Length: 399
Image (tube, rainbow, N blue to C red; front, side, top):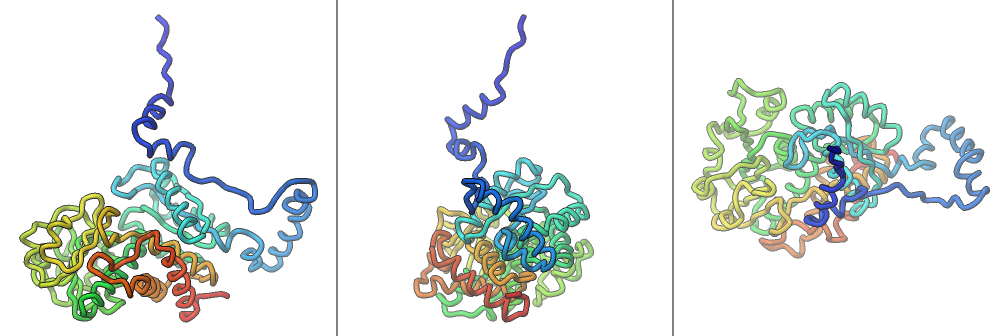
């Protein structure tokens, strides 16, 4: 009996008929295109040999010319190891590529920044750092993406120490910037200030730690962070190095116990962990509280529940008002940093990005509008300008 011949593409073809997402991804979502013509022998001699040799020699003699005569000054590497992809977790480098391609096209669409997806077949911290350092001469910035905690903290820190171009872990800092912007506008809307607020963050991973840092830097009254074992505080003996550092600059009130304990009387809930917060705990928050339940697709506190107790509600979803979406931050942040050839992205640049983002809708504030839409054309230019100015003010700009 003859062996059955199986068409390996048949399942994929069938998927395209059922789900348009597969049809859209057929062949990938991006391509490389030339910015100069190669129509004839003269064009070829300028774009490649012998003309290119003159440019190479000039760069060899004056290395800073690489920014003027190559794509380096306007391109970012989007680097992952596939260990913390969206809500999918550790799915590996190849399965992460559709997300990295998506990130790259968002860089271009919203910030005019070219980006190249790079998925690494290693989860070893040393190997990732060494690989990115060796790739860095081709790029003006490094966007770390979907790398699991706590390795992501060390990888970012070590790359910042070894490279003189911006290194930015978007899962941390993009989320933090947009959260701060929305919170600033929520306080303006309700006549309050950051300094009088006590916030509770559910989740001590990459996003939770970065949000805590930027809120403290921006002057929040107090913030407590919780993980699966409860409130992070200096008396716990099970803390990682990152959480031990976190305990050192948060939770001035010395709260212990569970998330529910911390929520009692709190002014702000920020969820970046998943799970479900009981309605009874939400009811114990201060009057007029803010609930930013950003787990996706299922917020920690459903908006219908949150609206019973909160004056401002935000989520990570696009089908509810006030979406906390990183695309509001990273394209403009990198565009601003690349514009001035910044050597790094500072806390001041992140706060400047948040303030600029908040200002976009300052005159349009309502409970359903404390943050702009990702499609608001004012967003990226405002963030770009603010980040570039902050880089110059902080002495990290090189032009």
